Length: 403
Image (cartoon, rainbow, N blue to C red; front, top):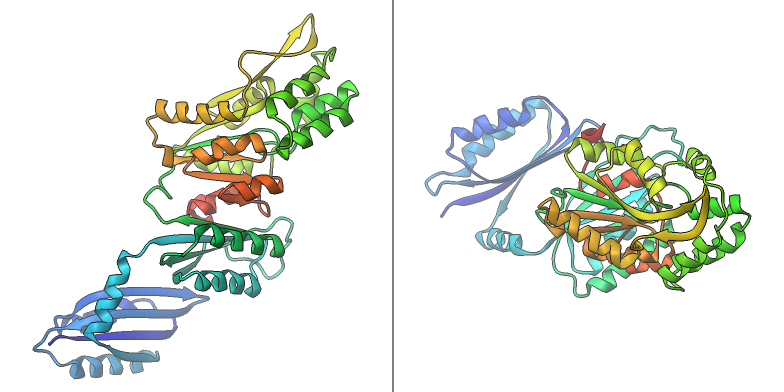
């Protein structure tokens, strides 16, 4: 019967190593069953699983390889693999595969230990670990740095909700973000991203800023907080807040727009996505005046928000047209996807409030961004430690691919 052997080489990385090893194997009519390589700080770990024909003995091949590795100064290890072991390994290819993404300002051993412990406890085996972020300098500013490790795992967890709850607890305890998603064809094939505006694309709630100018800041902030926590209906809270703006001079809108700041990572994220051909949209419970400013600044494709009614240069305390609430956001997401001929699984939705949950649930990848606890617990994915460009890691992009 044919013979199966696992060959492992480790040591200082050397150019041409794969070529030299496989050229020797080619003389023996070897069939390659699996091959893999990883290099960390110029240190190589290289493995290959081979099958020798029935009529061949492994001894001459292993002797030639051993001689070559000695010549190159690299340790080599040979391990025979039984037919039963190999067949059990092949059967594992049918198991479900998932991606676990760990995001932090700086990665520590404790973080990896906790994540890998939970995967093991839930019957998942780690097949591969990759760093998606750039190589970190020795001296880093943790307020500006970002780091990401991706785990490719396989298996079938007995309780997905429990697994997500465990990851959420680790994220809370260690001030990290952990995403758990199916490793499907859609993961790196998204085509549309829809954003909430206030406290998502911009680092403020516009209605709160307008309220400060109108002298009713504390009243509006209190209502906003209730709405974001899901304690009162968005449409009702929105009407109450807008009513408090009655009499505000129209010129104030431009002043507020001028001081609004984009959220960390927003420009990099949208610039990268636009360059890759993604469509983008703002679906906001805020106001079109400010959303359209962002559309021009960032090159957003679609904007849907609320039209603040103005008469004789003054805010009336009302909006015109259909209010963009949670249900409307979800509906618009589906409408834009259909118009662009994009499957629902190819949509990413990003928001921070309770009124964003309907659209987050409709998207293939729904991300609660720096969200309130209720929203984080309800959404499948969340980012709180990094900027908006952390979403690039969730869809599998490495820093070197986007720089």
